[in-house]
Image 1: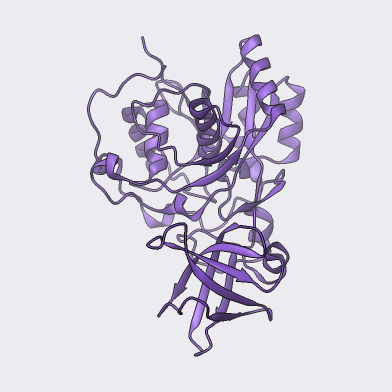
Image 2: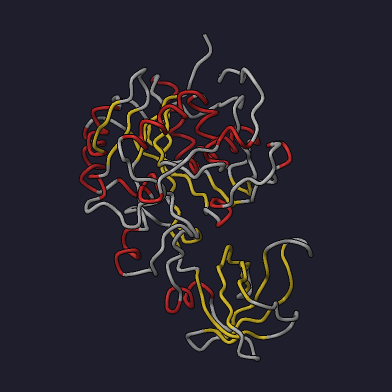
Length: 349
């Protein structure tokens, strides 16, 4: 089990100064050509991502998030001519969606927004509560088809250019299967087919979970007392084949290697609740008792984010802050299109 924190943490503990030029605006020329900071040993090692097979062992289990990013950003205008931007967070039944709405003045419930592409979106109210940040709309057609035809890739707020054909391809994993995410599981963006084939050849098993990443993943924590933070909710699923793969891994003494924090949240949500599908608001902070994940492949995260807290819980706060200082000094590229790091779960003595 992970050791308990030696002290209580506040939001300020997870802040750091990041030079803006280290925020990656475009992906590396090749997926597996990104840099990889191996943070498992006392001294960090600077590597290239395609070296990963040599850093894992035969018998390990790699678990990926196979969610697919949807073209969730849509534009339109109110009857008055005012501009509206929607970011679809979730597709419901009967052509209904849940979305963030960016608008100068919110339209009244029941009004229709005329969307670019010739379809309409009728505002039904807020979701799930009346004072929530999300809105429920009914589209005039099937939402997935409309987004595929008229939507834009929902690039993160720190990427400063509009979406392009490059983003449509590269802000998506090579094994994405289940549409529903508005943000990519970015640690998995570094894997190409050649690397996957090499891992298989070395006796490293693969399995998948699904967690539809929401826009809340980019929201900074705003309460100094971490216990007061309300986590966003995301839908996940752990299929039977993955449960069987996890059991085989345990039986042979292999390690569970989570690709990305969304995979960690999915596996540990299942371990906590026993539920293989549902919504999770799991908040992993130092002192969390991990039950499944042994090793983590992850990108570099935003200051004061819940993901900084998660990686600190797994690998140890002092180690993580030291690795981030090393990454900044060595000019690693940060965030969604940036480089990766390899971490091991800290153990009690």
